[in-house]
Image 1: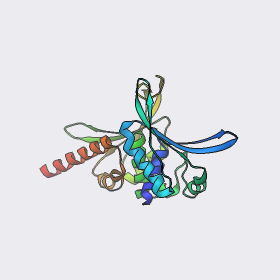
Image 2 (image 1 turned 30 degrees about the vertical axis):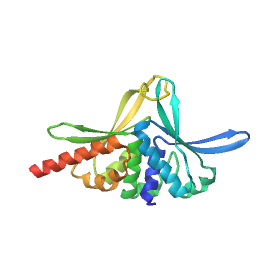
Image 3 (image 1 turned 90 degrees about the vertical axis):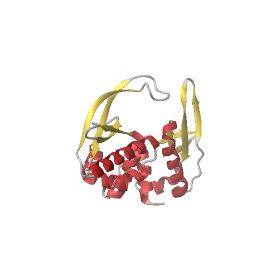
Length: 224
């Protein structure tokens, strides 16, 4: 398994993944949990495969039914015996390892995991198309945007916006402030993005939107 896959794994952990520590029957338990909707199943399967290939864990995906809501899909893994391995690899829910930050290849694979987890892709301005990548988080992520600027050579902006949990499974409807981290694909960064980010994007509609933009750009080049 390539180290890029491990960087992608960390990107998913930093968005939709969860590492829980709790006491059960007088024992401290450590678990990794990833629970997603149907559209995110490819990301879930990729994470499951990384657990199997890199950490030797065979995991079944569980389907969870919810009254009056769409089903979700879950993997849950006991990682107590993996804690030392995670520490050596600097896999942490709240920190980004230097080996990811300092490498364009590894950061781009990590970014693919972040986009699969919390990102969305849109094409704007039909006459002069722009492809916007937006990552929505509950907090400001200046380190992430700094690394995007460093490795993708593009400007990035952070906006505050109100969001609703209405569309989320099992969530009570409420409003809150989100932080939207936006950057745009351009001739300056498209080659890097195509080579190092796109191959690791798992979620189909996000890949489809990116490929659509690349086709638009290629058509425009051919027309001069």
